Image (cartoon, rainbow, N blue to C red; front, side, top):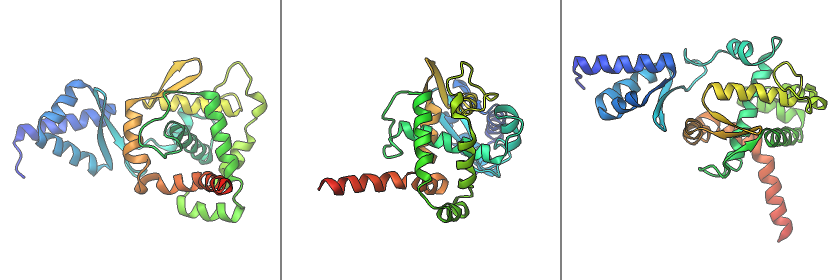
Length: 250
């Protein structure tokens, strides 16, 4: 396909703006959708760096799709900005699992394509995450070790990390990354999600999803290529329990 020079320049300017800022305004949104050729070029540029462009509300967002993307947030940046100084990769894995459970709470454990609740409290998020991790403990260590090979997550270390957090400090008035508590850890995850414009803090320790989050969840979180295997592993015990309860009522 032949492109006019002005289209190439406009497309590259838009790509540069999105890749640097991570998002585009309503004006960039209009430009992106008003010209098929410009949109095609921007999408191609994004694919070259393993990213994609999504629209949510009145904004465009530049979203990395792979760990190998140069635009993916590096582990050291996550540790330095959101976690404690002595954090390890296991803290990041626990962070990711926490996000999976949070998003799952809005989508009925990923059984629906639309959110089933409008908001969730921090305490409910904590409760659901603890339930999910306790359920994973029902697997024997051999099963968890085998799952580590499939999903590249050290499930045993994640469970140990969660158990090491002091749940006796959950009632502390200040909960942040300096508080060695489970709620303090979730506060760090919340700050990351807010910085990425994935949740809004609506007050009273309650969170709601943004349009950006809803788009990403529906388009990528439920896809086999990205997360489906992990989701099935994390929620399969819940499904089996539900099946057993149904069978018991027959």
